[in-house]
Every structure is written in structure tokens, then in C-alpha cells.
Length: 46
Image (cartoon, rainbow, N blue to C red; front, side, top):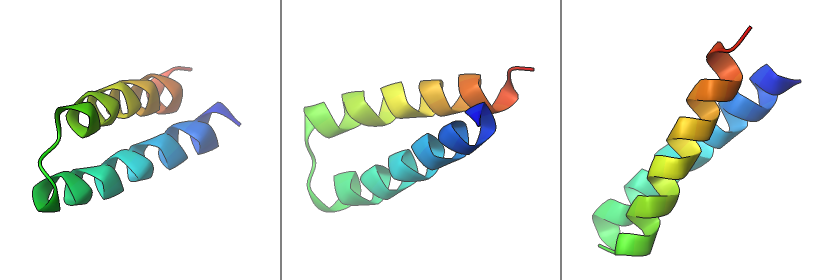
């Protein structure tokens, strides 16, 4: 289940990165960084 949540968070962050390229917002960048961190930790932890 943690791997699925991590994968979902990673792809949400990728989608938000595309949004950031269209609308440059600092809040979007912070959320992207947090979701990438969460996704990486959930997917790669045992």
C-alpha cells in the first residue's frame, strides 16, 4: 500500500510540475517538492 501511495504522490507531483511551467507559483513549487519527497520515501522504503 505504501508503494501505491508513493507512486500516486510522485505522479501528482509530475502533473503539478507541468502546471508550474504554465503558471509560475511558489506554492506549487513547495507542494511539488513535498510530494516528490513523500513519494520517494513511500516508494523506496522497505
